[in-house]
Amino acid sequence: MLCLAIESTAHTFGVGIADGKGNILANARDTYKPKAGWGIVPMEARQHHEDVAGKVMEEALAQAGKGLKDIGIIAFSQGPGLPPCLYAGLNFSVGLSKSIKKPLIGVNHCIAHIEIGRLTTKRKDPVTLYVSGANTQVIAFVSERYRIFGETQDIGIGNALDKFGRQAKLEFPYGPKIEQHAKGGKWIGLPYVVKGMDLSFSGIVTEAGKKLSQGESMSDVCYSLQETTFAMLTEVVERALAHTGKREVLLTGGVAANSRLQGMLDTMCRERGAEFAVVPREYSGDNAAMIAWTGILASRSGAKPLAAKKAEILPRWRTDQVDVRWIRR
Image (cartoon, rainbow, N blue to C red; front, top):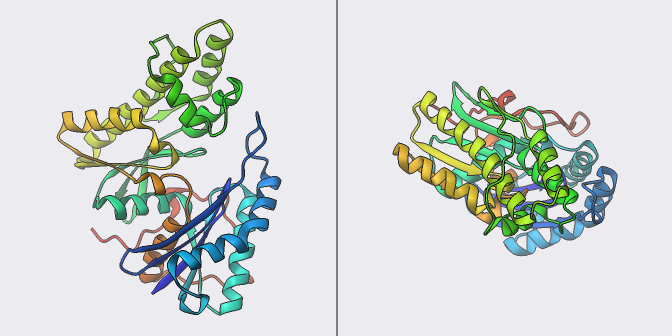
């Protein structure tokens, strides 16, 4: 069984191909880049996705050495995400499904980040820290669903770093630039906002911007921004480990590429006797390989294909709203 999948939740339009054994045959993508000082402009991103869709699909088929006749399932990121971007993926996927007469499967983008992490790291039952632009969640599988044990109450950690990066007039992508500036920095005080098992980042970003405008060095502010927000994340993950009794931690999502966050989580896990794993960098950001693999898992477990005329986007589809039938415990 081969699944060809479309990813289009935000700035990336991707096409991935996976087989039923968990082999990733293709992972092609093209990323919309906003103009300097701007975040994603959703309608511009949609236009980008529509413009590159055909080219990216041909690239994926070439990577896999396959043709459309070899594809058995079409999957797509149904949500959550930016509605204009999701519509670009929906329309392309529906058209492709109708053209080659193959079933269409909708995939939850957040769960796909978990499943590509579990596949590539061979983690079986982890507490997952999912950190991306719009999403920050501490997740674990309990009673047929991925349950959220803690999450952001305002903006995701990725958006927080991006927001500061724009204020600081850094170059896009902002996260790697902040990580680079943080090396050699020293601590300055920033708010530490953990509310029970939830977190808040917007006030920290505001204060970091103020510190920079008051003359604190870029290096010191970037260092302190990372140390503060990543310590908050590590604290909540540690408490989720204690609460669930699980012995594995998986770090996934775009911000998973940050080496400092990896290091803090690794230290915490070693101190608790837990195993730590991080998704490979190729699959940390938005990608369609994860959608393809999760599409296969969903299809195998009896997910009902979507009728082309009734297929829709789900911009606010939460991680804990999906029945995860492919895991049995």
